[in-house]
Figure 1 (tube, one colour):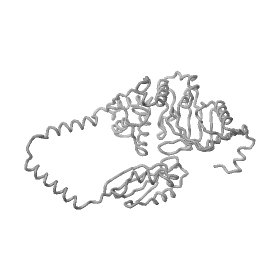
Figure 2 (figure 1 turned 90 degrees about the vertical axis):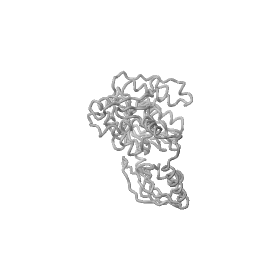
Figure 3 (figure 1 turned 120 degrees about the horizontal axis):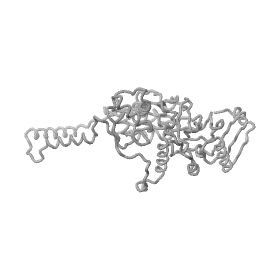
Figure 4 (figure 1 turned 180 degrees about the vertical axis):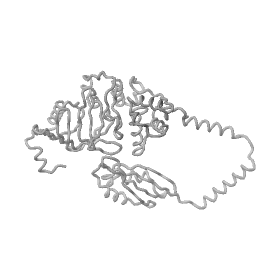
Length: 426
């Protein structure tokens, strides 16, 4: 954060505007002059705005921090009470006060810029120099969308194709761009009405199929399929991605650009946050659906069971032994224990991890024992705390421990979220 002296130097000779309505109109004019859509900087309850024309330094001050969810890009962005930047045509750089949520962590955004006219994308850059592009339509209001023309190109350039972290590609064909807009509108529709509203551009909920993913021909087909897609089905990682991921024996060669991008992204998700989406279904030749295998097993079992036969001597003896074992277990109660590994994630790279761990270990319960810990790098200079605990099952609920203690006040000042990495009975 800038000191008072440096801040005064930055703002020397500035044009300053006060008042919510005046600042709102000023921000819209500023974005228009820079070439950005009106919704790309949705600040709320503005109190003060300033512009130093000589240097291009601007600031916008809100009454309070604000979080905004962009439906069109499926991202959550947090704006601090004050947002600053240096501006030039088609670009806002050296930004402060803006963070995007990625992989459960808040990542600073230091620059946003308009890419070449043909792509109609906005590129957002992080302090590490890497970033992510989104279609300009994701930040337009309805009036702007009605005036925009989708570019008539076969394939648009994606700037993050080889990025293993930000590997969610921008939609690269004009048809995919139309699909993206239709999907965003569909998400805004109340669930009770969705079935009655057709969406001709939505991905059809039908299984895709691939074969021999260990061969060059199989990987080539998958590479072509992923050219205009970020995932195997839909707009988020799902079980379909896991099915294909497991079918690929080793990391694909960089010759298969799209497969390599997708594989690295799914690999990163599995290591960091996991995959929860259901998917639309996918078939990989040589693999049978799990439900079929279970059904086959059930059929085999039915053939071996005689529902009306008399109890044999062996069955009678086994039944008596089970009854005796159950009676013995009732006399002596065994204390069940579990070993659990937790991932404790901070808010950002400025969180003091030493203090965070101290606060976590302050939580004490009967049947709870804190064990070894280590800091694991996540990215952008951010680390998470991985810590082991031993619990008595009848005394400690891990879910309650996380919700009522580790992510509640006052620890939530340091802890953003807690995930269970491993849970084993002792």
